[in-house]
Every structure is written in structure tokens, then in C-alpha cells.
Length: 86
Image (tube, rainbow, N blue to C red; front, side):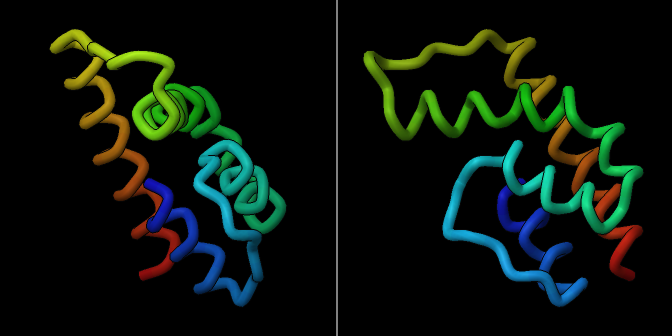
């Protein structure tokens, strides 16, 4: 998700800081295209996976449902952004 959000920013010739924070990247995208606001809940959900896995206080364990939801959101959001840049 991080890379596809950054791809949208690059496509629109916008610079962005070195970050892995999906919410921050989404906020930059929203400044270009307000329709990104519809993605806030999904991006917030996905953001916690990266942070928890990268900086775990302990080993993170996710349910099958959480994993399915993360995959579904990633696919939906990727398609949303691809449609913006194609």
C-alpha cells in the first residue's frame, strides 16, 4: 500500500517525506484528490499492520478474518489508485 500511495504522488509530481506511515501518505494524496477521503478507514486499518510488525512489543498475531480484510482492502485500494493513474 505504501508503494502504490507513493506512486500516485510521483504520478502527480509531488514530493513526499521518507515515511512508511500510510495515513500520512493518504493525507498527501487527499490534497491532490479529495476522493481519497473515502479510503481513510481502510488505510488506517492497514497502517497498524505495518507499524505492529515493524516495531513489535511482542509477536503480533492476526486472525484469519483480519488477514482476509487486509488483503481485500489492499486489493480495493490498489485498484482505486491504479484507476487514478492509468
